[in-house]
Amino acid sequence: MATTTSDTLPPPAQVLPLAIGRFRDALLHPIAEKVATGQRLDAADARVLYATNDLIGLGTLADFANHRINGERVFFSANQHINPTNVCILRHTCVFCSYARLAKEEGAYTRTLEEVYQEAEQARGAPTREFHIVGGLHPKLGLSYYTDMIRGLKERHPQVQIKALTAVEIAHLARIEKSGIAEVLQRLKDAGLTSLPGGGAEVFSTAVRATIAERKLTGAEWIAVHRVAHGLGIPSNCTMLYGHVETADDRIEHLTMLRDLQDETGGFLTYIPLAYHTEHNELGVSLGRVGSATTGFEDLKNIAIGRLFLDNIPHVKTHWPMVTPFMSQIALAFGCDDVEGTVVYERVYHEAGAHTDMQLPYEGLVALIRDAGKVPVERDSLYQSLREDFTGLVIPRGGTHRPGLPVVHSA
Ligand code: SF4
Image (cartoon, helix red, strand yellow):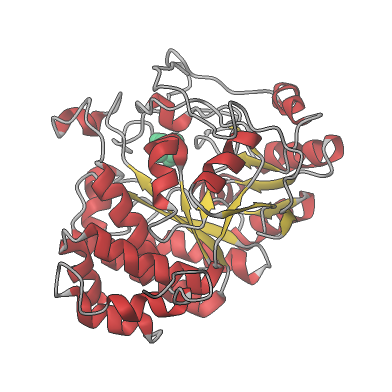
């Protein structure tokens, strides 16, 4: 009988070719041929992937595609989310949003710079290397509020990089400053901005936007802001909010627009599929879906298809506050190589009904990745490796991090 050792196991590059012809859904076979030979998938392929129920087959393809780019490495960051204001002029038109308030509405808040600095003090003595800063479109806060904030944070925490302001916030600042997108971005960069987050993309389809975010930046405008940022040497992330009214074709159109821009600029670092949450927002009520969530099947499918279709974006991230650390860990076998970080305090999705913990400890992230059989890599905002040797790190409870049972939070 042949022995099976690491010497006799097929190398990862051969695993997919061995699987071709054996998928439960035969429609995956021609796509597997393309993936195995590094050919780009087209919209027709993506339609097959969105229609398939062969989740394991789909995951096998995505895992192979990811392995070719990232091997067994899985990235995470020690980050802290900061949300300076929830006051937003689009409060009544982004009907999926649970976070925004009007200025005089109960629960509205706007932090002074001192309050932001005070919140950021949690980074002192912690491993934090990134502040992730997003918020509402405040009618009165001008660009100087943000440039002063970034300068102040960099002075106090020079080792921490700043990923701040979605394309929607950048366009809003340009509007109230009566200046161009490039000028706003350059001033933020001069203040110390490292990169842009990927929020505000939702789904680019005009019809979808008319239903869920009718006054928000159009898809083409969102893309245009990121094009300018990339041109100025500011890399960015990109997202898609799935699980509301969009169709598979809407998702494919969205992914195609992201892939096209990446072909042009190469400025996207990671793609993050974001699961729509139904609590405390008008859309959840009108769809009759309050209390429901996207399914694990949908969450894994969107991770896997993102990895397969966006062949030019190096990383695909799972956002554990939205889908749970349990699902994020499984996503690492479905084409995902990037896990949302320590976070510290998450407001936006917990307002919408996310029942996850507010933060994951650094050790917990290392354990989550390692327990999935992957190699953890602590990264900075630009995906430069900061730490790969975790010898001596104390992992709680016998080497395995067990995320807490879901609890209900109020922001
Ligand atoms: S999604 Fe963003 S822009 Fe829209 S209402 Fe919420 S905070 Fe404002």
